[in-house]
Length: 518
Image 1: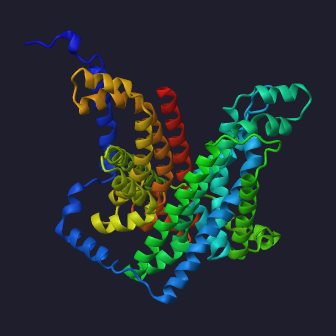
Image 2: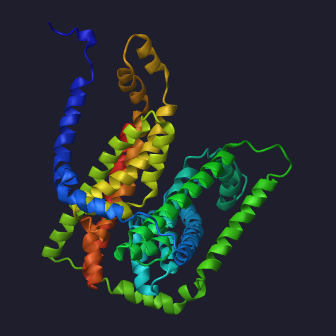
């Protein structure tokens, strides 16, 4: 009996066409990522991962080690805070130059935009590796790397926030004779202050995770201690470090949420915009930045001296001319394709797992799992997944999937909670099951936001996928680590350029997809 045309899904053909197109595009990427789910259940791999995880228990609790752990924890916090201070100092003038906000005729500065693309396109781990080679092991490399990468990220977002703010007050100030800096300061910044502060706090939370990752290349903190413990196969110490890091991230997350709630609270009516909370918060921030630089004992004058600039210039000059030989370019192209595959497969797996966790009925348990997944850095996950499935891109894709599912699961849960409830309620009242009500009532309303979050994470994952090879997870990172270890700087320059171009391409594709969704 033919189906009544009124009951047919009008979008069925379009969905089928998009599904077939996705299959055609994704199949080569899954092949390049060497996806082998069966490897997770091979007896040999299960034995290796079981022995490895078993070595983590019990966690180390020796007094001497806990002393080192406390120092590394403070150093990690100091690196993140000092790096963010440098990033903000760099981001404010760059955002001013790059933004079209506060201009009578909106124009963009392509030179500054290009600088921002380079700063944020090269992963902070690569910057840290370069600074370690110039300034030696220690936290200075981590602080400078965070300052450059996060300075580029903050400047881009600051410029976009100011451009999306109502321009009327700034234009009124310009027409009354005020210069652009004052028009921005008094016309746009008060409107955008909550978003600017909220994003800066979020980036500080991310900087704590990044500071741990950079420790794997000798930039100090918990990451360097973790790298030493894992190289010595000391699972008990690694477990204690990981638990400490989880607590640190949970505290940072709670502090971040508390600050965001405080920003959402309407200010009390008073003659002065500065209350005791605002003044106290500003004083605490100044003290935290001062204490961070004091703890790290960084000689900024030496880092910014002519000798340091000369050493940096000589090191950068050693990367040129790049190796553009046909054989090497072929290897770099293969690494680029592998890195793209790792990022796409990892993000897709994370989207599926994140959605399942977002829909999980056990809220406290699922919330803990989400926090646990996103608290463990990708490089640590990659070390574990490499033992589970062997070295290669599949380990990198799994590492990205585990970490990103924690991030996306939390964002998905918020988007689904904010989705309109009326369509799903209407379907339930008409006799549909909860599953169909979700698929046809809730999901369509939340889909644009879910897809936007996924694309943003893909942009970030392409940068992380480019460095997972540092622990044997394939792609451009593995090529870069190998060439830098052999001091082949001309070849390393080609790989770094490929990382930058790939990041720029993914940013453009992601932005185009978001515009199409809008």
